[in-house]
Image (cartoon, rainbow over the protein chains, first blue to last red):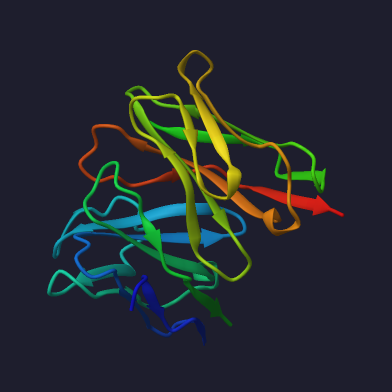
Length: 114
Length: 115
């Protein structure tokens, strides 16, 4: 597709379950970012990928959060043992390279923990 | 550390009136500055950006912003509001020489446009 694609668009799960969120960046974009948007905390950076490596994971809130990227393309954000405070919209963005290149955002995954 | 402050979580204007959304940043190094717009249930769309060069930046949909280093500001303006401008607006900063490009966002300003 032409833009950043995220799936699922909505996810409802029970507390304690694991969830996987997927991001398909724009073809050719080497930089990929995950952000979290919640009512209380606003928009927060989670992790940055350059190719398949993640030189900046400083925004991951706990060790229950992990992410990987394969083939320099698709990325998966995994949350283990979900908690209610994990409820948020998870946004993925990609850019041609890091720095001053604009980031293109997907529509996000709305995660609700019951 | 970098930070962004957006003054006013809600701004209401009449259709045809001037739009002014305020953004102040804190950065110890030359920043890159961005304005994004978010419509309900959608991701963020880039309106405009400042990296280097001309301090008055023009973006899409008639918006523009001026980088004022002395005031550490990057306010967003539009001469005449349209109903379709109603959305949430985010100002963001990234480290000018960072090797990550991660964005630090303000808390957002919801723009309401009254007919």
